[in-house]
Image (cartoon, rainbow, N blue to C red):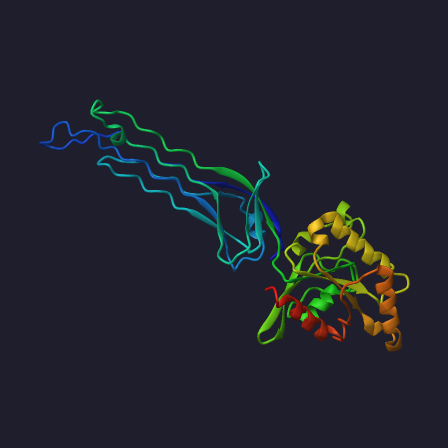
Length: 337
């Protein structure tokens, strides 16, 4: 299924049923009086988190959703049936906004969580409601109220503990494969990853965390260069970012220092909140560096970047250093689940 993380839909709640004008007419009961019932309420529209849904792809084919209308009232003071509520399945992590007003309606981040996005109309009153001591035979009733209608924008932000970011071909997808059971595409050309990938990293029987691999960033992503910042929203929920740096780049490739600084700058340009998230440096592809040169090269990179956070040297290709990285991540996440 194609990964889709944004969708626009229209939701319409049900209209209320009309009230009824009716009079009781039975043998031997003259002037029985009014007995028109009320109309039923229209159905509400809800968005509800469904664990079996992990993308907004279904909304490419169906964009309009309408709840059932309420039934009209009837004689003998019978109230019309209310319209059934409509529940629309969405993936966990969906943010909901009203397109017309720009208002954020909710954030569906919990399992089974639901959110009413359109309220059904109230049913109208039958003529029984208007009976009084001075109006014994009212011939008036009220129509049902219309249900709410809204244009909604749905934005999916993947729920992960750890997010991988870096330049294209830095080895993020290979690292995701080594750390978890996820199998993102790996190839020797840029922008191999075209949509975010989630993987569960199991450290031991009782400890695990979720890692998100997003497409690579390049300088100018905020203006749409490369794949732009389309997928950066998926890092906003993360508790820790791993900035992957390619230390084994070929001589003709871009300078890893420049690309690392450019990616970090794009984070700040996209969102101040994202730039403030804890960020660790993961220097990848050390298997391509002579063992006696690794320590000096890592120190040189850290010094030129002016980075003062945790630094890890790993090889996603061979798995070297990845177990230590996993243990450190688990230890960092455990105090604040």
